[in-house]
Image 1 (cartoon, protein in one colour):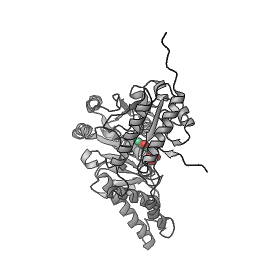
Image 2 (spheres, helix red, strand yellow; image 1 turned 90 degrees about the horizontal axis):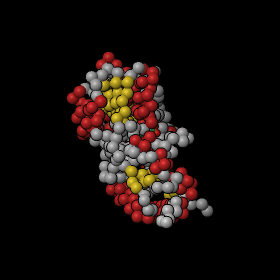
Image 3 (cartoon, protein in one colour; image 1 turned 45 degrees about the vertical axis):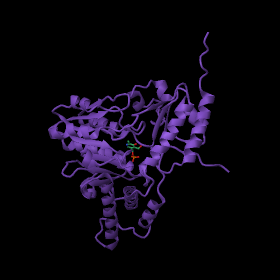
Image 4 (tube, helix red, strand yellow; image 1 turned 180 degrees about the vertical axis):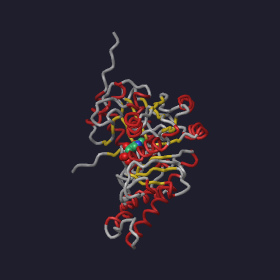
Length: 387
Ligand SMILES: Cc1ncc(COP(=O)(O)O)c(C=O)c1O
């Protein structure tokens, strides 16, 4: 009998909640209407999409459900937010600002503006904890800046950014503020109204919903140019027949989280802290990346000096986690996030990302700590002998 590995990769994706599946099932079978159809089948589907939109809006603190546009995930939402906003704002300027530690989807969208549309883009550096200083954002703004994109929580090191302070800089200048909130939305950390962001990218599979569905929060009145046009769905911002079952699943997951019906983050944080405490004690020289306090409750990015993280994970088959350096599948390059916070290439290769989630248990944490500490001891370079 083979036992399943301990899943410590909740930042890559989360298991879908059984209740989410149950909510989706009717829309895969008997409730098959197209929400754009005027007949009863279509109207039933349209009602379900409306409910899901309301639930996603509630999850992120949006005032109006029409501020939610469904997309295929956070990648598409990032592109719509960045390229769509910049194109709509073209008469006002052609400069966008982002940070050095954004997800590749954001960096690629900015790159596209530069390569194909003649914009300029500035990447602002972060400190050793992965935080961008609001004053550093202010310093690079020009009269031509139309958009600033700063992620809410980082996917590798978990660091949370000071979005409200950044909004305090962009809003008075009429500059649009986008945040990639794929990692934070499921932790009850995102309130778009409170933070003052204009656009926020979301992804259902990071919060126990299905894959292939996400959304962009677009503050009411903001102008965004659609990138995918056709049938005029999603108020003309994202053409194509909506993926009704996935949207219903996203809404169900959002609702469960809003209701507190999936074990809430304090438990996740306690488990992460326990794992962190044990590994720091038992693996000499191990260090934690990311902000000591202002970071996602489940995130643990650890650098284990002298140890190739990929080899460690290869050896510890009982744990499903990821390396900090191999996030760019197959590129062989060290993570841009880890190098941006000052790690050397060797340190980046020695970095492991463990992400605890709502389905993690005490036993998972204790067994994972045992397995990792044991493997690290067998792999650690021998201490240099004194002469
Ligand atoms: C911060 C961040 N942005 C964007 C994405 C992409 O999300 P999706 O898989 O929904 O396209 C991810 C997921 O890896 C992420 O962590």
